[in-house]
Amino acid sequence: MKFSMIFEAQMANPSREHEHQVLRDCVEQAVLADQMGFDTVWAVEHHGLKWYAHMSAPEVFLTWVAAKTERIRIGHGVVCMPFNFNHPVRAAERAAMLDVLSGGRLNLGAGRGATPVETSMCGVDPERTYQEVEESLRMIGKAWQDPEAEFEYNGELLQVSPHSLLPRPEQLPHPPLFMACTKKDTLKMAADYGIGALVLGFAGVEEIAELRRTYDEAIAARTGERFVSTVVNDHFAALCPTIVLDDREKAQQIGARGQRFFAQSIKHYYGAGPAPDEAVDPNADEVAAIKQAADDHVAYLHEAKIPVKTGATSVFNVEHAYGSPEDAIAYVERLQAAGADEILCLIQMGTVPQEACLETIRHWGEKVIPHFRNS
Image (tube, rainbow, N blue to C red; front, side, top):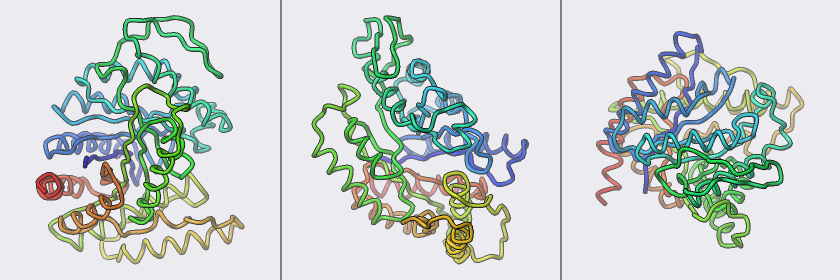
């Protein structure tokens, strides 16, 4: 089983000064993750989501991290693949350059970046995002099958006459491909495409197990006709929100507060909800507060006459790897039993202080990861 971290560069108080500090803090965390034995650091791509993610240029962040680390893999989790975000030729060129300079350490994920803020900002047609993501994956999957030949592509949406696509990646025919999967339909797409799945799952272990079953069933049923490459990557990475400290109760409180901010930010940009609550009260019971936030969100939807869908409050579930190293080990064992090939640690959340992030990374590196590597 693999262990990784994912970075949103999320922040409460998104001032210019704090933004710059958080970005530098993320680099520090990634460098420590390399030293502590994590397998991969992933970086998202989002645009204009002030309270959710300031990681708008992950290729720059990941290049900076690659230059400061020695062995950890670096992952685009993900590149927004609709054409007005990133033309697939440019996405391929940047990925290959980073793969070469990192010594073949790149993973490449694809996603839609489909919030209204982002699509309107970059002129993306929301109705075409799925088509454009698939076309981009097909182009990248085809690009270096013969690294000495010129690249030519004739698809439904794009055509490229013969050109030299440079540089060529170190990992041939291309870095491993993944897809962000936030629901069952996208999981089935990833399986049909023959690529790895980067899966959320705030609702907990039972949801992860259900999503794994969906992925496996789609793998078993596929014909191979929709594969985007000659290389198949059936890899299932499951999200694991976590804060691990010497003080177990403090870890649970910091984790619950960070997740509450994260959850409110998701609801603000992806669904319907007010701006997240940025206040941090050191005397508050944050485990109780996140449960109250779930109730408040449902009340908000009712007041706004917005249908309350199944899973509307799942992101407020706080039963994750918060607490002691032993708590984290027990939770990871459950994720492993649910079918996770990779544990995708979410540590950097908007209200979590840097010292808590660093201590969490150390505990994972010294106690949690070795428990599974040595067993």
